[in-house]
Length: 293
Image (cartoon, rainbow, N blue to C red; front, side):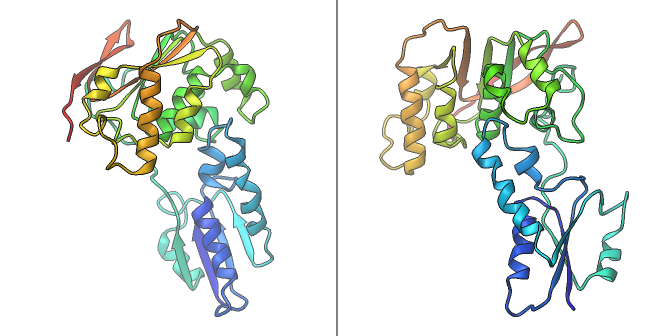
């Protein structure tokens, strides 16, 4: 009987297990899905924002695979120095498939990055997603403004969590500690900053538009920064998804500032060069202007 180990229980790992047990050429194959964490589903459980319940419901499909009579989930097993070495898996299984993602954060490499109050997206997302490795840190307590470095979907999620009213998050599976901190949050301004222009931004239009639908929150875009992008004036040659993003940004840039209680500022062509210190923690971020590629 063929035995296969799949390391990682996120979507790629679970769908790998599904593909194996559905192979006609592998009758009777048995698959063990191994994970360092005690619960399966990877980023679907611990990375998708709690207010994106439709995406999180993908767990139901993944659960069906793990309930197959020839698939077994084994949590709490870390392959490597703190657990069985890869060589041991090859002794126990006929084949091993690794379906794991990046295990460490990427750092900016700028002075002041390690100051209290400076966090990676992994740390912040883990906190509001109840990841077992999450730090017990209030994150937003005593903070009136926040800077999010990046213009992809993760950055949009972080900005949205910082600006969204806690009443809308209470029905979700966000942990109580995070809900309590967000309920006390005094964050009124969120700056989402990218080193490149709007035509290179990696957020999707659906997620981008969500920022404009947050209650008591306005999105502010500087038209002069949009105009720095050579593709902004004539979007005809851009992919359809990028054109849609630019039209959303253009609409916000042309709209007057309303003075709502919370504000999200989208900034472009700015690169962080230092995190400034004030009273022993983050007091600001210094940027320099970049040029279009």
